[in-house]
Length: 134
Image 1 (spheres, rainbow, N blue to C red):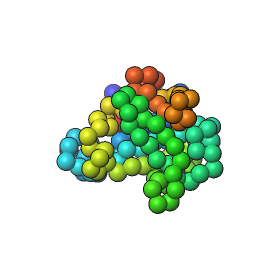
Image 2 (image 1 turned 45 degrees about the vertical axis):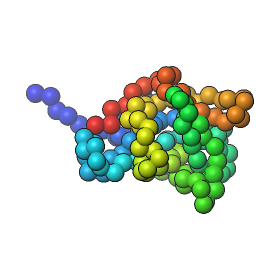
Image 3 (image 1 turned 135 degrees about the vertical axis):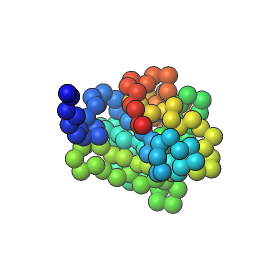
């Protein structure tokens, strides 16, 4: 007999600057459910990318997601986790986001800087750890 004990949802080893996950309402396997793309940044990564700004925007390009600061009108609110030194923002996947395979992005990444675009980004081909969201 094996007893299963509860664990914190963040009990996996944190190795990257950014954790990408997907939250689904109505069950993960239900493809018609509403879902949210969640970006969790370490405190250090948050300061590198956003500084003291409270809103974030992001862009998909090929196998990369670029991040920059936004404002209250156009950006996603960055919140902090009380028990973990993380800064988080969530984007509900509707319309434009549905064309991207957000499930393929689930995992941990280190941030990279693109000097040409002057933006920080993560690269899907450089995923550090896959995280099972099921």
